[in-house]
Image (cartoon, rainbow, N blue to C red):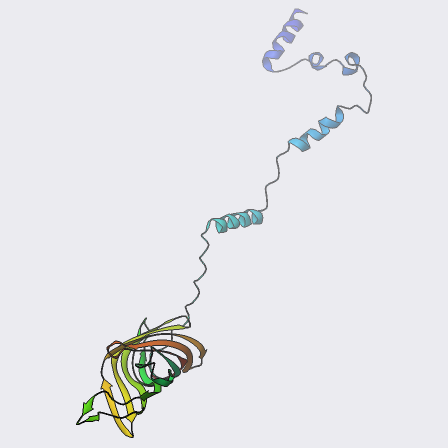
Length: 268
């Protein structure tokens, strides 16, 4: 018996467990019976589903999100600026103007003048260089029939050889002016500004007792104008234009309101 007891004592050292030591007591003997449909069983079954890690997204979704993020970070190219309208070519321009005139001032002898006409007509022709820049130079030649009147003159107070220098009669007068004017114009949208300074030839014609005589003056004259372009075709334009012209040395001032036609002779 001693030998058998020693053998059982050394068996655990060699990794051998007696069969009697491996038998565990039955759980039914110590734990009370529980109902079959127990509540704790449900969360125990669902716990793995709630704690399981999410499945990785498909590779295509990740690439699409990366491309969208890259597109969001890339700078958006600026919209191209609108193209400027093409400039009109330079040209050699011929122009002509026709306008009624109104003279500023009164006749020399208003008490003796029985008729006085201050309304006349102005005609002009010229050539201009329409450049691609701000100013367009021009030179023009114009003539204006400005005013006319009849004055009744009494006998002259001057006695020559015992007779008056002239006897009573009607003096017929006419005032006209030639204008040679270089200058410049500039266009602002449809409006056209004009400035020129040149030489005036003021001519006063008199007829008395059937005799004609003429008095001429050569003063400097300047002009300013404002026109509005109301018609613009391919190579032809029409402007409504108002001007002020003054020949200061001859004390002549007149206004014009008329039409100016302009056409391109040669384009560059």
